[in-house]
Length: 168
Image 1 (cartoon, one colour):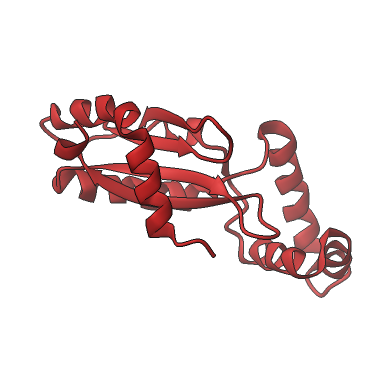
Image 2 (cartoon, one colour):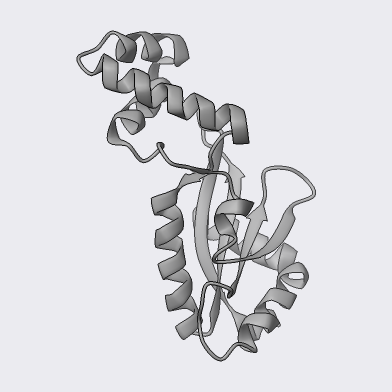
């Protein structure tokens, strides 16, 4: 696995100018709320893109799933990375929790068809919202980087924060 710290440092160095407006906006806020700016960096393709959004707007900016957090679906996705789609799907569709899995799978596929592959879950987004509050209190802007995935994964997600004074 690539070192996440090095990836974040490189992104901050490369994209500091694009990140600075959001940091200035954050510094001008008196209190944290759901309209506080956060940054999303899409580093999967060149050129890398920096998207400024708000805590509230995050799930509209990043494809978010209602079902990906389900333990059964997580087990399937882990198995999928081990043995491939066909074998994993066969195991889960014919396994002891086949009926439950089938319903989850249908919902997951509806989400994928309607909005694309999810980057994270709603619980991940809620955790990040809490992190953004802690970052605000520390004078930092909360950031998410969507990176290329490891072998068998479509993407990676890194969350971090950057001192807003340094950025701006």
